[in-house]
Amino acid sequence: MHTIELTEDELRLVRAALNAYLEDFGHDEADILRAIKAIIGKLPYAASF
Image (cartoon, rainbow, N blue to C red; front, side, top):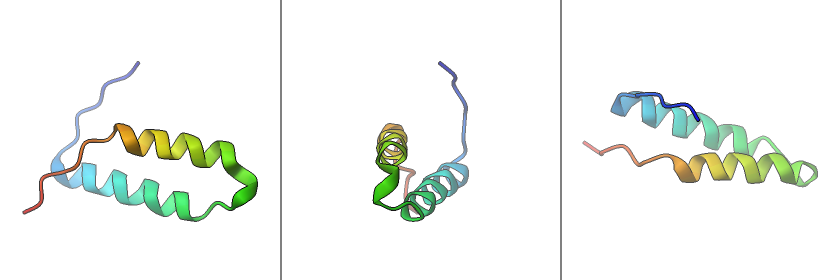
């Protein structure tokens, strides 16, 4: 297991990047879709300002 520290802006960027990446895959990549969704599910939500 690895731990990284992110600022609120970095966290928002990572979440946005993963969501954009997720949208690029189709139905043939179900294993990749599940993996990306699992990672997104682990991310905390950044505080909104």
